[in-house]
Amino acid sequence: MASSSTGFFQALPALPNQYTSDTNLQHAIEFFLPRSTIDKAAPEWESFGSKMVSEEIFDLVRDAESHKPYVMSHNVVGRAINKLVTSHGWRSLKRVGQESGLMSIAARREYEENSRVVAFVYHYLFSASSAIVNCPLAMTDGCASVLAQYSSHIKDSREIWQRLTERDPDFAWTAGQWMTERTGGSDVSATETLAVLDNDLCARRGEDNYYRVQGFKWFSSATDAEVCLFLAKIKEGNAVDTSLSCFLGRLIPNKAAGHVRIHRLKEKLGTKALPTAELELNNFEAQLIGGRAQGIKVISSVLNITRVHSVSATLGFYARALSMAREYAKVRQIGHGSSAQSKRLIEVPAHMKVLAHESLRLRAFTYLMLYCAELLGKSEDRELGLGKGLSPQHYRLPDYGRPDPETELSRIMPGVTKALVARETIQGISECMESMGGIGYMEDPGSVEYNLARLLRDSQVNAIWEGTTNVLSHDLVRFIRKNATVVLAGLDQLVADTIGQGEVNIKDHTLDPVACGNGDDAVGGDATLDSLRDTLQSRMEEWQSRITDPQFNVDGSQSRLLITALGRLVAGLLLFADTVRGGRVSQSRSLEVDANIDPVKL
Ligand code: UCC
Ligand code: FAD
Image (cartoon, rainbow, N blue to C red; front, side, top):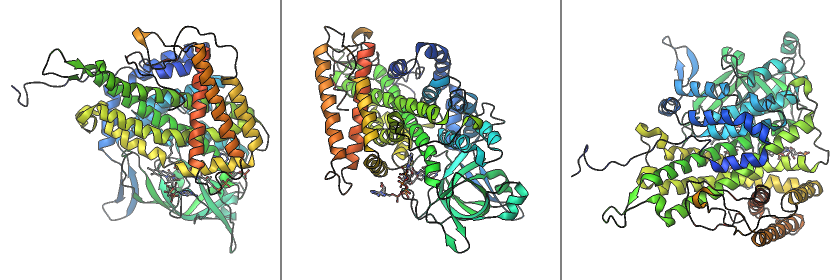
């Protein structure tokens, strides 16, 4: 007999440690990092992976989601105060991120040349429990990189950089990025914000690059940040530049002086705790950073970093959704009526084949994410003469003209990966939701750890911010058309490093990337790997010939196909190389399935 308090209640297991239970991640880490780095970082990741599914963190997420940010407009006597109020959960999660080194590890090169990869593992683990504080942290990361590059342009850039990359939350600052206006976020050339040089201000501040800015910014997500980078056009007399310049603004003095007003906070599908605002700038004080009319080039360093963050964020959601789906499959019973047919979902091949497929896709995307992190770290070290820790005095201006194949890949792969992964994860998380039936669709605050709906809502934005799919696709094609030789050389190098390497010494196995009988990793046999290698090689050649064919993609309508095909190809190359080097194609051990999935056809 069933009542509200008697009868059947579905068990819900606690979510496992998000690092130790994620075998996809661990194999990717082994592929990208040397053993000594893994040995140093793994205990920290393990403790972070456990913390991310603790009651303490889920309480903060619940608080941040249920106490949405708001603007206190006036005080009791009617004076406008325009104060942003965020929740305890939001502020605390930001501190957790900073204290855990999410801002310092990469910027200060705490793991030397492997720091970017190590840091992105943290970002991935943090994402689903961050209530989207990882968004301002991502922009902070990008801003620190720009400040370091252009340190000679701003007198106190070193102090600001230290605050942005700080572990101590009482000292740390965050940064925002304001590119988008009502006229457009994809194409920002019609920006209406204007900046006028203020000589008096320059004299008072002792620097010659202070401007007064008037304008309206349509999207500002890090509205509680202390500094921001933004785009505006310089106005001199009646003449307005056609190209944009990049500026650094300090929010604390500007807010106090009433130079920035929150017009309103946005009502959004997801990212509920994130205070995304519209901002009015009125005599806003800001400093030109980088060359006049070079704004896109300057801010593009932020874009490339935040695009990898967008990838790590959405993959963190995907991994969490899969973790929930997997745990649920272990306990959810079907066929209660007949004990002979009664099974847990984990014993149902049709069900587990779906989850295995998602796990394989997640694996491929995880390799892409860490590949981007590796490229980013290498290009920073190479271009900026780093290696001992980013700090402004180590920097020199990047030389984009230098024909260096790997640098060119670091220019395109963040956009390529973001374009592919942002869309595919929405579908993947949706599949995980379906696999949990009605429970998957719920938003019960009593079980915030199993709120998959929140992950689906939040994942949707990654396909929009930091460049939509079409915009990233067009950028790729434009860039390749201008730099075909070096990009193709970079891809040739990647092919040589992955499918072109040595003998395949794996015998007597079939290529079954999702099989993991009794916890043993499956491995690929020579014959299958050889045919896979041929497939990858010919697809890469086909892709390269298309991209260099002037008749192809004349109207831009094929760009989207080109970007997703390139993302899949690179994922296939990385998985292939992992198979050969590690002698395995691994898969989560908790999935007992017999699906056979070709990693190239994601
Ligand atoms: O959405 C936003 C923030 C949300 C929060 C993010 C958090 C992320 C983590 C999440 C965690 C949960 S901020 C707004 C983001 N907005 C965008 O991404 C804009 C999208 N639109 C584009 O990307 C367009 O392609 C534009 C705006 C860059 C195109 O502008 P232009 O003026 O047409 O510029 P061009 O001609 O394409 O590029 C000018 C120069 C070129 O170099 P040269 O002159 O040497 O040929 C480009 O190659 O800039 C170079 N450039 C780049 N360089 C353009 N893009 C890049 C790039 N990505 N990297 C390096
Ligand atoms: P549009 O540029 O108008 O695009 C509309 C559609 O047209 C898209 O599908 C796009 O792909 C397509 N399109 C545009 N141009 C082309 C083309 N040439 N060819 C083919 N198709 C095209 N921005 C910031 O600067 N700072 C922030 O902090 C910030 N936070 C955000 C937070 C959230 C929650 C959201 C949703 C957005 C945020 N953004 C932020 C803005 C975001 O970057 C923009 O929304 C995005 O860049 C798209 O710009 P848009 O909204 O003007 O759309």
